[in-house]
Length: 377
Image (tube, helix red, strand yellow):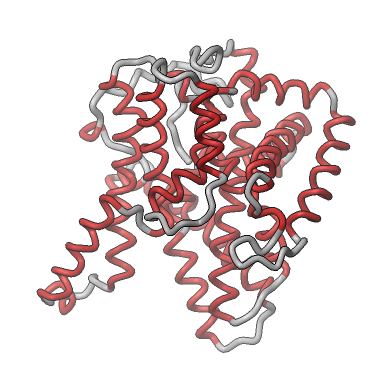
């Protein structure tokens, strides 16, 4: 895997050019939370609001870009021994997946009362549920599960299969028609091409972000053209039950996912160049994307339920926006509150769950530069 597998070790003066990665991750996590909050709120309140249009527009590139960004830094560790690789790319995700499957499941199953704990039948069912979560990704945590799977598959294929062959097969899998595969296989087929593409073309993608900042006018025109084409294809119906819009057709979906992911890279790169409070906020969300991703479900569900049961007449779009804001800000505030306490293990893997000790932190941290960034969503 020429180029992409070489360690990306930017000099400190290049730190600013990597800031766009955090901005792009911030955009992606906001789009993901918005999607869950909007669709859930619309279902509960029985209608749609303005955010449903945003969610539909972002559907072709929202998850592809997240996986592409997650694959960018795999080249740093893919040639390491399996022990270190497993610690960074498997145990890391497994720890958070198992922990938050337990947390989400307890709340969903209602096993937080003394009565529930004493109910043998319910406890047995809960045990089976946890066993199933080992092989079937659970709820919103499927993304964390798949990142570990993608990392292992990529390392197994590395230097054994020509990268272009892997890319071609991954693209073919993405274009498979719906055939009722188990969730894990279905999501693997639909998403792996973006993760592998992020790994394979990492250096080119970083170079693309540099070129965008150097040609702002051309980049803005390109983004405008992309947005128009994206909207036309997303909102053009086909009449087909499996692919209701043109954007979902085989081949078209792959193209829109790829181009849309690069559009987010370009947009994030331009925002980093411009700076400002919005960019800073997105960078903060990107740096804490795993905090938001792990923690958004509970405040989202609670806020949505409170709005639905309040009986107050409210615009569905506004309700969706409120749910989204709460779902993003509460995990960030909670992480800040528990930082340095025993509850910190909710968002940071403790030393006991490391196969290989973490490297010593540099004395002076350079903003935007992490020698080996944690592989977070």
